[in-house]
Length: 409
Ligand code: PLP
Image 1 (cartoon, rainbow, N blue to C red):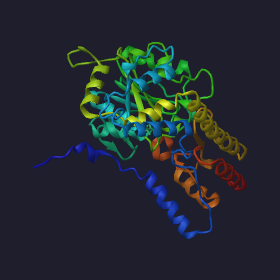
Image 2: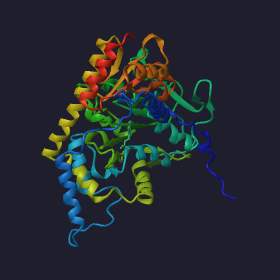
Image 3: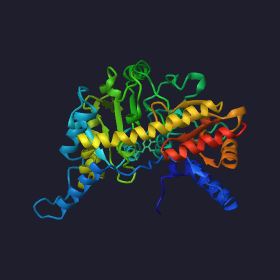
Image 4: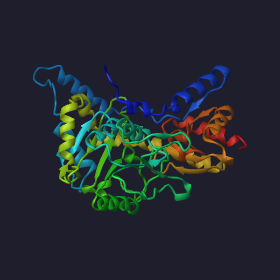
């Protein structure tokens, strides 16, 4: 008899985006004349820039020719891309090409990394959170059971981020082994300053813990003193793994390319206390379970670092940043309490009059015909908040704000 991994039965069904889609479909059916503006899902809308498309065409043509054809590539990624990553994203930070592992997504990397850690590790996540960190730990048996009342798993340490603590998580009060941090944050759009992140690095060093740092939105940082990489922090190369993605940076959500950084100076321990290199373990896992990202996609990723590619990509980023500004300032003018949106494409607003997140969703759809994402869908501390994204068109961002301002909240 085949037995299943029963940890999967411990997962809570996420109805977040399916419920959003259902409610929107219902509204549109009943109001066919209304133009609904969707600022909910975190997908990009701008097409891939010409310099990248050109590189993809060229690489495709290479595959059509016996002399330039490529079959299996290195599982960890081609040197040309790893070198470009190190040179451009980690200049002067001491990261080496063999500490870079190219993949088909930061989602997969964040999810797969749990393979190399023992089941009895204690995990800390911020709340609200990008759900992948939590669910992959539930699947691998680290969560304990789910408590319906407080909507938390008993073995997970939740670090609330809310307006009371200025969206800076406190260090865990109980000892933890794995800490997930995502900054700029999805969903709150907030960031940590260097000295705030330093506290987590110090904690990890003191407790022989590891930080899994998701920097998928790094390119949106505009302010000084906000670290783009955790390796800007003293000591981080001993305790942190970083995830990066070309998805939001270069519009690769459909193309698929990302990478993880696992410094050779980061160690884990066996039950008997022996130090083991995590770079070696992750390399072993990668070579066993992955056959590399396609050549064409890696050439595309490389082109994002060319002078022309970089220039074109940054134009798109500026467009989204302008949207974020329009949405954020417009909401403030409309009397909302607003967070994020400065170093991030996400705008996180406090719902008015203590409205529940879903209540606000319904009102916004009904009155302004604008769709966003209820904060409660990202964790219990997201209740009473709401996420809008800057990834729509400028026209729609302006129109959405105009409609929101016309309503008496
Ligand atoms: N990490 C965070 C915080 C995200 O919000 C997302 C996507 O929305 C990802 C990772 C996924 O990135 P990728 O498209 O590279 O899988």
